[in-house]
Length: 483
Image 1 (cartoon, rainbow, N blue to C red):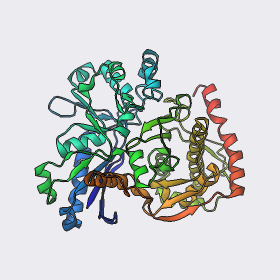
Image 2 (cartoon, rainbow, N blue to C red):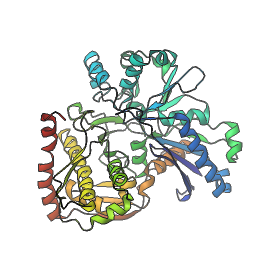
Image 3 (cartoon, rainbow, N blue to C red):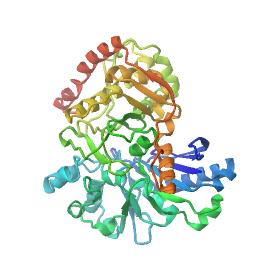
Image 4 (cartoon, helix red, strand yellow):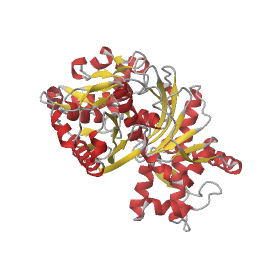
């Protein structure tokens, strides 16, 4: 038996799998995000741990006999979050999250001061990454920075609570900008650029390796017969790739979660900093991946639902059969954007609203806007020489068939929909836990059963190609106007 824990931005999900990877039980606990200033995004690290306790308690209550036989636990989590601990392992401040934009000034200064961020790190220095967050703390909260003994990513703080060990893994560590991504090791030069050393970093393992075992008191609490190993795990997208079997070079998926991701597996480190493509280690050995990332995918839909006082599912149900783009355009830049613009200051907006615009057209515009932003990601990957033949869909947004129909036709590739599309991260984490417990990745990362495959509709492909050409003119127009 194996457990996957996925520490997301809005919730913690846990699944319990059998030896054949069949789902035995699952549980979810909600999380909240604090935004104390415009552009800021923070969470209490201990809220992740409390949520983990809640979901593991629920798994034990639902399936105590299966829980007793658990041999491996895997972790997945939202990337880039700066979790600062003191010498006693206590958080010094709220975690600065992946979608926090406060460190724009530090990004430009770090890029100018240390060019190795673009070569060894393989990525543009963006406010979402961990390194500029620490530089912001260094400059604005020097007393906190001086007391910082250890910097962990969100899932690795949960690992610390589970095992008592400071350990990270390659896929998540690559998103800090302190990793020499090709060598899969911390870079002393990149750490020094933000006033840190290896002493402030956890030791690193591969995602499919053991990082330690569960503490004895927790084994008793959750009824494990023997202490399970805790796998290295993966950053949320790398773990999702493991969950949908996207571990072979060329395999790809699209994630419609809080953020949106177009993910492709590579057999080598393949940076493309000019187009703001992310180039990271994968969660399995000797493998890397590229990502185009947008910051507000289902976040955009949830925002609209909140404003209109409707349920997101109810809203998407209003859209009906799509015959082309909405007459209204939406730019999904609620908190800035990564690929391809690397622009922390740009903001979202609707264009083309008329007296007749209704909730359905606004929702349709949001679905289009996110899809157009994913098309931007595909274009950036194409410039990097990466092609995509088909994608799997994961994340909460993959429950919307109309959204997937838009994406399939716009990207002009088939979209495969797994049966459990909303469990990509937790399923991948559980699989990594299984690999760590067995000491092998052989036969672990198979593709899941599909409930549907959505092919591009030629007429829609043409109409959406024309709509994309109009839509992509909005960003430069906004920037020229000073937005």
